[in-house]
Image (cartoon, rainbow over all chains, first blue to last red):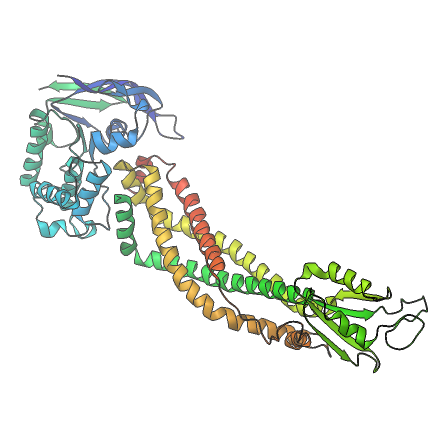
Length: 227
Length: 316
């Protein structure tokens, strides 16, 4: 297995706060594996995901992606092409349709899928995998339920075929059937397509699919189980 | 390309906000059109009048200076040499002239009123030298009609200054309002910007998209504003000129009268015809785009400084 992401002495504190959320964290994430991170609320799980996905930067230490320091690469390109992020609060374009959220992501990432129609067809297929039909695809995000929005969020994260999938409570609003379908997709992406999947969760069913389970406690990341 | 498509889609999605922005921009453009049209037309009238009057040369004896006690007049057989009607008529044959208006009966019955129309204002010195050669005495002056110009130009100059002041106020206030409005609009769209940044869209592309939206709105407002401004410019100008005439000192004539006084010297004018020439339109377009761009850039530059996660966390 090759290293995909590596944290070296990563320390993070919020602006204006003396308290460190992450304290000299060292960890490695490999390709073709599913990782789950567990921990109490406020332990720093979401912060860790923000750092790994290039949405924020740490004050001390470094994060390496495929051996290259994140500080030295264009984080916009990293976010748009290398990483797919599934947010707990979805973070979708509310006034746009589900379909548009997906096709826009493809455009931003300069996806290999070219042409408006081809992108639409690919987006329909992705949304269908998430259990959303064409009629729902054409509805605005504001008109969708929480579970539907979450599924659009997952589809968007996968739209540009990223190397790393980072998910914050991705199944929190899904019914059991959809949750299993989504988890099956994550497992397949990791084990068959060599993606690195990192999931923050409180759900035991999600933890059950993990190759490695990590825990955050008092600013430290530790391995709980190796799959 | 997708940035432009995204901007076009957004225009339709945010009708309320964009309508408010459009109303403000439309008001600024309309008032700018009115002010600039009046300013430029007044400028043209001034230049044309000045040119016309500079071509009209009056040959007349110099009046006595106060305190000298020496009276110098023409045609009256006084102490100084006088120019006869025949001489005045002979002067009219100069090749530097387009025409002349020589008639008896100036201020006194025996005086001659002679106005010569030069082909170009620059020929004044050559023409005077020619007249001196032809025997025009030194006590006679060869001058353009400055007093008529001053009486005509006064109100037009006031109108021009007024329109310029108005224009500056509109532009300064407009710029301030635009910047404030842009801040409000961008704040409202902070979440959307955060989502786009989180998706990996570059700051420059987000700024380009927002700028494109503003520019499209500005262009639409420009077309409407030019129409509204063209309709409003003439009545506004007429009202200001009427006000000028009313506020003139008792006994003084109106601008129209003063322009008519110069009949034969300048074409008779009863009012200023306000026109929006292509240069004025271009100026207005440039000013509108500049204002919209400055306002947009200031607002966008503030918002894109934040890390995307901070923007999203604020909202969530």
